[in-house]
Image (cartoon, rainbow, N blue to C red; front, side, top):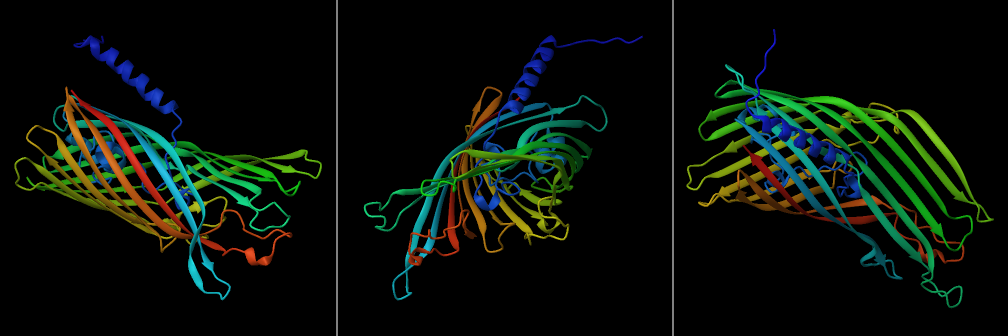
Length: 448
């Protein structure tokens, strides 16, 4: 005979509401900003939550609710009841491109701006952590839904006639060019943290990655009838991987954490269309469909330390390092498993500080620095800050981030002089690209 007893009828209703919120967030189409240098395989500075990002994106050696699924699932064991996290962010991506300008004596004058773009994006995340009522070694479960690898990038430019030929046509629009990458790989993660001892915990998470990456290139040519075209390519990907975590409490003031995330093999199909203009201004279309499309992401290794000094009010200081061997990356578009694109291994240093005042409101600061997997000479730095406001059984959090990455890159579209223009207008083959990112985040954490 099987019997059951329901002590709290409202818990079932709350569970249904929570499940509805999760499905709602899963259906939202996110659009997190990414510089061009990161749009191939995803953002290296992706947003997690206002609390996390205001402290430099730290979380390997510090409990982050259900988001510990991503950083270190061993810290899920710190949860003693139930915690729910909801968050939204607004991201501004500002890109400027410069090429060297020379005078008639081939002497450098200054960097001339050739393109400037500013776009706004937004993103949402959800996480849940709950302690199970088990005796002996308590177990905490975590559930999270977040953008792990956003690809979103936009570039637009106009090419105008720099000469007086044809007569009276100076600054006339020659071409409109646009390059857009959209989509993201989202992670639906389920993890568990087990407290083996008061000073030792283990954790594991399974990640289901799913999403699309769509790339669109279009040119509208106003001078040549057959110069316009539009090319679209969409990759539909999904895959599984896992994370193992370890937590150790050295003493009452210091904790360390380590985590390893396995390789993610995201597989799927590629579809696309190509549209070209013929001399009669009638578009011809070609459709493509490819199978066996895949991204094989590398392993990820994380380690961190959290220190709580003897201060009143309390202060928390945490720092961590994430290492990713990008030479393991495999891409079906570039055959071979021996790093055909010469991707660089990356190190991501994160530092966070939280000081809580007597009224229970925390002030948070952070710094983050990582080198680029695409260019060994490029790196990205973020300065972060935030504040928390206790409300009811939870806390509202807000974050502010400012980051910049400078790199030298090939032009997205070639700058080849038209037959009607003099060769003196030929541009340098590469541009200095300055990406400035400004991001605001808000969130609410509820514990009960």
